[in-house]
Length: 415
Image: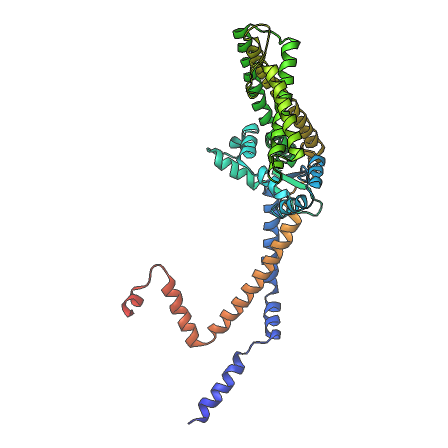
């Protein structure tokens, strides 16, 4: 009784084993069906590739501004010595791995994309009710690549019209140039912006100082300080500075010498002489006083106030001139660094379509059709083989009936 089951378990797998030769026989037997399905897929691919609307891609290549240090900043770094090297190392390590990433981010900014949408009426072109949707549609038609070894940025724009594709690519660069001119991208551009702000502040302060000088002239009635008063003020200032210097030297000597020391005595005599000269000039024993002997009472004090106002004006004039020169140097460095976007290859009207690629679509679709036809043929052969077994055929019939939307009353009753 055990021999029968053992023989059946051994022979049954051998009967169900399928070899490669069996598969080739099935495919050869149904070669006409496979050929027909493959031809249908190929013809369908040709028709679809002919019906699909054409698209054209225009490409432009730009050279981004150089983000390296200018000649002036390099000179300043060299003067810093070791600190300059550390600063340069820190600046390089904190920068982006690829400088083009910043410019690509600027190209993808809403400012540039919104300007493109408004300039070329892309909301109407893409049938978008909202600006955000039109911007997203535009992004699908644009490809930005700045990861090449050449260090350039390649901008590709796809459109149904070849002329419009070239216009969009070149217009994209124009909008990017407009944005970059309003931003301080390079190191020189940042310095130029800083000096521009400082120059404006210095200009305002100079205007305030000139206004204060004008009010002083109106209040005192003095238009120009005479040479005598100017000489007195300058001499008094020089003597006061010498007195201060001698006092500091005398205090330093008294820390290690007595008052009877010859050098201390000599330094004290020189100090007394300077104080006497200052007292004669100021007419006051207190050398710190600013009053001077002048032919007319308060003329010295009036002249001193005028000199102070004039000194402020001269000071802010000097600051303004220095900042103006620095501002011009920063502008020159910015121009040398190529802050203006340079177009290497402008977009031209493409003479060939970029989509659809009919040959590629036909080959790929034909291969898919052939694979589908072979799978269908094998499935059909396997189903026919299963139908030869009565028990399996009955199960298949029951499965078909169960999969119907409307089952027969007999099957419903059985369930």
